[in-house]
Image (cartoon, rainbow, N blue to C red):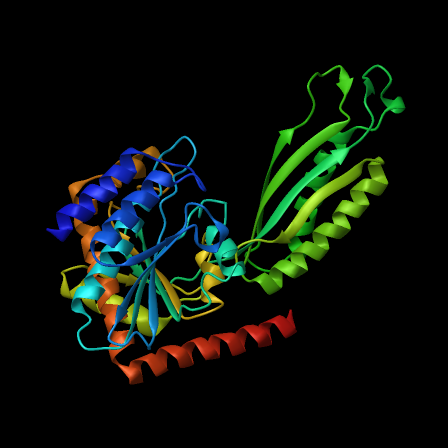
Length: 386
């Protein structure tokens, strides 16, 4: 019965894609089901209208709080090509299953709706506004082309820049200040900067506005960059290099820069103890599970910021064959198949069992906490070295 209800919920989210911070239907679908299962629901959590926090106390309620994190925003023009409809179904399912399976323990099951992962940083906003302050452990799983544990994620830097120059007729360019030239010079300077940047730093940019007519020297140009680094500490190093480059471009061109250059998503640290529990269940259910290197040329997500605050995991469950890339029409189709929903239920059960182990096994919980403490210590040392 639960499987059918969760599949219908996930399919409805898939068929009604909503952009970040606009996920009203998805929020309602998730919270309606959780309320029917006896959860108390708060909407608008962390200052975001489409966020939520659903709670179910176990025993006396005075114990660990395990949160399953749901995402449900879509991609512009692509719908659910990242499979967030399945993340929502798996998280809601895990919360309900843990409520049913927990037994005689004290603590609380929490399901949190975290909007706008695709660039909006919903979890970052919710963290800053205290939504995670009473949560001890966070678990989520993401659809992929393989079942995967052990993988971390890279940090990002927000970099958006506009140059203001002086417009004039292109027959007399010396009378103006070419804002587009400033942007082009910035791109070239960043290319020359790459050998000085920390290993595995990626900077990719696009020009969003370079002028309106070829016979007019543009007085305004706008560019945006995606910056990925291994850690936020390395991001600080990269930002200082970029500030220096921006100052140089201003001096060479006379254009004035107006920009946002600040930390974005944090790097992601897995918790091996929790992930091995998830792996164990998936393998018992007949799945092959791969172990990825901790760091590599990976993407980024706002779950990284959560992993800096508490033991948290972001593992992967298979819904499509290798070669089907995320953020494509093919992955959007793969996110709405009987196989995908079957895998979603396996993910829900794997997360629920991991949550049950956290709640019921004090020794295991201590191991999880110690692993997190060691990560905190290692980050502090790395920050000093950077």
